[in-house]
Length: 283
Image 1 (cartoon, one colour):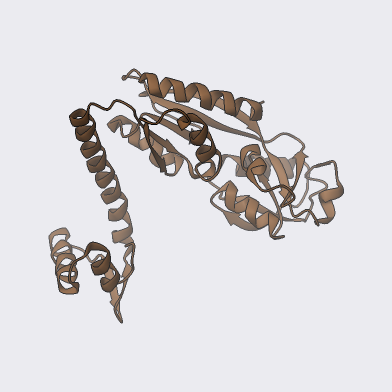
Image 2 (cartoon, one colour):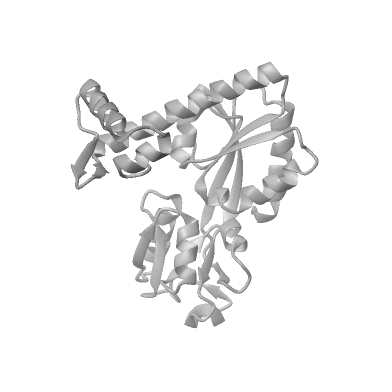
């Protein structure tokens, strides 16, 4: 799944190519379905393989966590924190925050996982991590959720004709190429309703999965994007123009912790820092 070829997999695992091929064949026989389409030495995953891969990753993550706990018990180390965040803040915001948090904490080890919000919410019953940061809404009675609400902003290439405007509205953006997130995202419905009520043409020319991709696309001149303020402020100075959008489009995230398990002191310390750094963005 990672390498795309038997040769690459063999080199990665330090095994022979026949061993890799035989292992795949045995696994397909046990599962009762094909995992790959074989074509000139390349392995193209089947849809069934992609579904199975998600479950396999979860199992491997669980095994890794079990090994880590055993090592901590053996070595007498208590300073371990596992954090799962949605990709939007895993690229820039969270690494900077962890750099600040780990300064002076030489004995602390942090594991940062980047997964979709739906995956993060599904992991909690199994206690796969100490703290999660997920897009809302969350419908899980096993979680305690601390909510943070942001006002989304419009971003565009600094040379865009609308960069001279002090703020943007659906009327101003009538027919202007727009970069939107997928229809499943919370901001999509809000924007659709807002443009409809203003009787303006919401000209979506590109749909993408993450704010980060939407922001990069806007910077490249594909169109104007509406993103969260954390992503907007993480871009290098001068790469994008940022403008308010009226009426306000809300975007909410939550800090998630298991309800039936008290957080460790390390988790509480990190939550305090995270809360402080998110506060300037909230409304």
